Length: 258
Image (tube, rainbow, N blue to C red; front, side, top):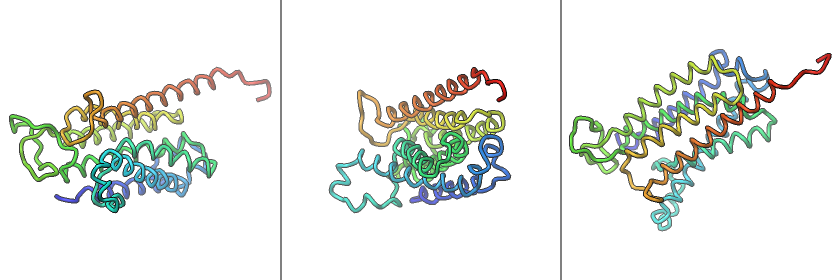
């Protein structure tokens, strides 16, 4: 299905915003954040800001990687509906967007980041589903059609390929279920957000070794492999910082009368 990615991605965004707006079913907001921050309008505004900055950054990242093409067709840089997004740029942009929102509105960063953990995984699921339908992010060619992807690549070719997009869809769906379960167990602010980011990055990192769509190489590895590894390290660093922060708070001896 050609040009299906924008439609499926938009559907994922709508589901995410619906989740953020339903305070009665938002397991995260009920247990982690203040009444002001848990208001649906705060969660939705934070999500929209992260989404807007993330999309712009994702597009900038993709254009930078394919500058030889866009240098001769600069007007197409703004044609988001054509596809072409860097997930690494999108993740960094979303984090930056959420940070700016928190600075301007004086909301705490980590609790809001936790509320975006599940929507972030929904966006990842929608992205892999869009790639499966559109034929982008296709896998390496295979000799046997036994495990081949059922959809053609972006060129319309139906040669047997490793089912990279399908595995991405299944992985994201399982990760979403696991994340939903963890949301009811984890009480430390920031941990759920870092787990979500790490799981998204781990999937992208592993599947990057199966991809065959053209991209620049650095030291023999795809740039998205390096980028996914960097995001994975960022998520792990966030988990470490959250753990140290809560450990310090747990070691504080309250003063008499507190």
